[in-house]
Length: 160
Image (cartoon, rainbow, N blue to C red; front, side, top):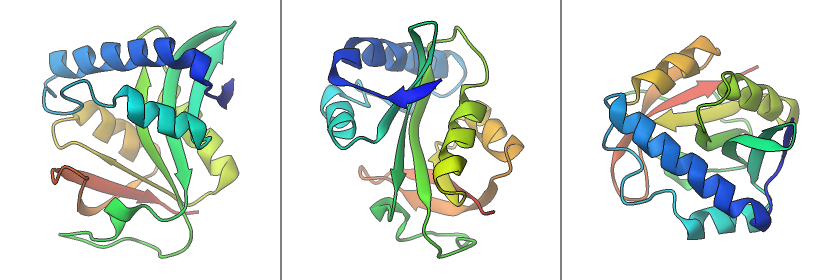
């Protein structure tokens, strides 16, 4: 079940990101989500703007992701490629799980597609697990974008 996150869930959400950072480090991706990112302030902002979602089962939170419909400023410039469509889209960000359940990415994509079928996502070049999941679920690599700290990310898009 996917539901909007609430401030009361913040402790569980922070624990999920802590687990995800350790998992990425063990999996050959030590450079993504460093220095405690995504941090409390970003997550609270997402919660207050109703764009952070939880994956829950039997009352337990096992996954989290941000979903934002509308223009994403970091996607305004793309290098070494091009977007597939300029139509309105939703962006999946900061997807993570606590390691207790598989299929979080598929659940998130299905949920997001039910809101708007045109999706974008990006990931770090060392995040090979996420790159595999993204392409497995029908996204096409479009090029390189740069996040707010100036670091590059591989950008993907899925159009209906």
